[in-house]
Image (cartoon, rainbow, N blue to C red; front, side):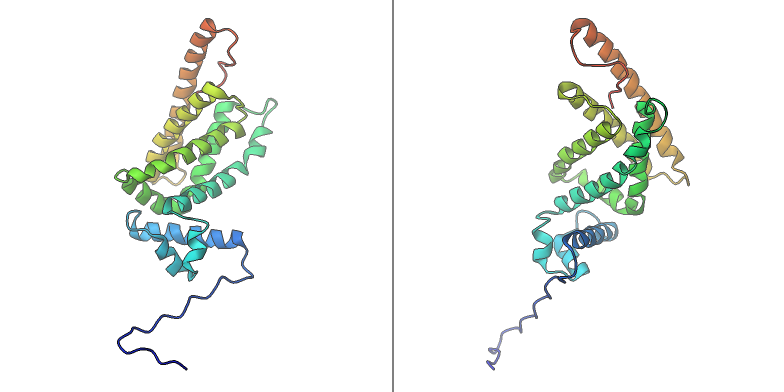
Length: 231
């Protein structure tokens, strides 16, 4: 057996390869959970994917291939939250004779999202705090727009083009304001968050009805409806 050259630090043994019995879905869930725990403990600015590898005892390649950046981990986490939120969409769409009020469905979907985020509030607070000083956090914007579009579709708002863009931006503003309240909402039933979200949706609905009325007078063939809120 070859001797270790003098003066050289012995090489660390290679980390074990991924357990073949662990599916990629289970592994990614484990990675995301570890990432959120690290962020809650150490903050967003200090967070690194090497930390996740150490926490999960996975090779760094198992982290960096599916998640090349730490922003990619958060986007995957947001997809998981969206999935939990959308699981309630069928029940909401079947509520009432006409499928329920659109504003109510938007409210229920977004509150479902806040409920799904609740176990990760500490991590989300760290991300929100540090992201203000991180220009790379602009990478979150397209993904949040996708989330808002999913909410609109799940609520039964099937518009497209400039109208959908306007609705997506409007809903993002409403959600951002409610999210700010949610971060420090210490009420047992998230009453403060619900109040902020309801106010925002009502204001957006009113604004969209006014806008649709003005645009319809100018372009009668435009596919808009006063019943569709800007959210």
